Image (cartoon, rainbow over all chains, first blue to last red; front, side, top):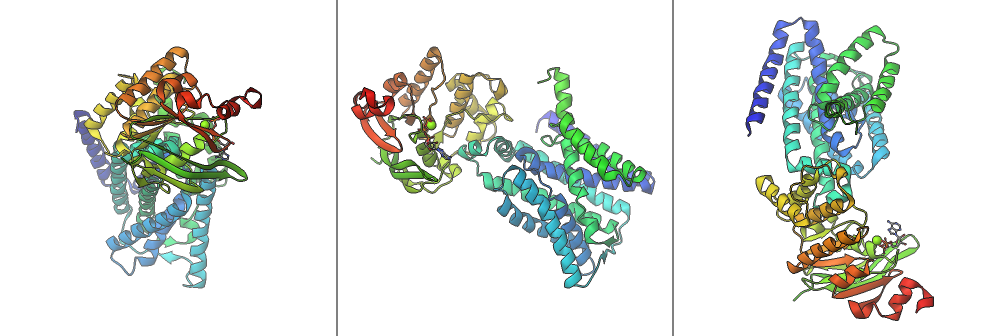
Length: 306
Length: 242
Ligand SMILES: Nc1ncnc2c1ncn2[C@@H]1O[C@H](COP(=O)(O)OP(=O)(O)OP(=O)(O)O)[C@@H](O)[C@H]1O
Ligand SMILES: [Mg+2]
């Protein structure tokens, strides 16, 4: 490890310690904000891990997120909590494998549509199952967690996600991902097993997303499909990653923090127009900064508008 | 000694169009052989079937004795086959060195780290791009992109190189450099299948030629003789000149 990376690690550890101590110092309301923000930072970073370099724009985020939350809702009274999380991760992983196998051949817009459809399909299936098979409309999650407990779990997951993303970026898998995002044929001819690498990354990314849903579940206390399968989660994740820049390690974080705060404020101040504003923002970001803020800053600094 | 490349009765249809209609030939180790033919005669399609980019409708491909007919491109690459593309295909997100590194990292020997970086520099030097690894591929001139693509192909450490009009679009002095580069490879014992329209290059490089027309092999033999055959002249220039 070079001097520079070891310094970066020290700094990251210090920031992490500070963030972990925060709930002990700030009012509960702000812990809640921090919690939601950490959730989205993790979602956006995990999303970008796969969708950034491969450019497979996935709208399936909420499918995995919701499955994670629902797994906790179903199992929280029968299994010890760590096992519940393990189950959620396992289910997310298996689901990602199945979805990945069947869809990663689809290119461009077909993949986008499929993943959007998948999220709806999962939501409808869960609703149907609960109404017709288990006769439950909504479930309660009773776990002895306060906001800060959930926050600490999310923070640990976020740190792990960054570590994984950083590791991938430096490995040959990271190189292969960028290459296949440019040109799958060339990557394959260079010896890259394109299907396997896409599948691997889709599974890692989706499993993390499932865990975010699972860890956040106790926060709602009451869960039903329309809450945890809300497509806004997919769109917000996407827009955050795009704003910051999905090709960079820190991009999703840079996008997620301001947008989360903005959305919080908007949903409180303009609850009726929230979706419209979200849509407009989306369009604006894609038009003005298709490569993300970080790339924009870089080109501005170099002074060449290329 | 077994052939480095042996294809037999290779076939490909695109809908109603028969692009390759049962082509067979083989290359001995160390041979540089030209694959010629007018536009649309099926040369690139043959290359695509060898490299695994397109599935064959019939026939077999053997490399160093192993049947690779049904393998995917990444598996074919691990059998020591590398190629360039008719239209250069640089990977723009990666810089020049990373383009080359990709083939080293996923080639037969899966090099990584310092050793891989040294080898990248070696390959870049070989094609005349020494010290230019950190440049963006988008900033390279056409010939330099072609050089980079050659370096990327060589970086997978192949035994068989498929060049699809690698010399096309170069000016006369660049062409000379390009020919010398292939001669250099020839000197190292590389087996090369060279799809080419430029006769000067074919004469300089290929002892032997295979000529295709409308999906079929119409001639094969020593370059000087094959290029004189009436059927070949007719295929290239039309009936009037035969
Ligand atoms: N993917 C494809 N789908 C449909 N038709 C194709 C495809 N690839 C090639 N063809 C057709 O097959 C025939 C052979 O094409 P091919 O590219 O192999 O010719 P070529 O000998 O390489 O020609 P050129 O010298 O112009 O490169 C052409 O008629 C072409 O239009
Ligand atoms: Mg061609």
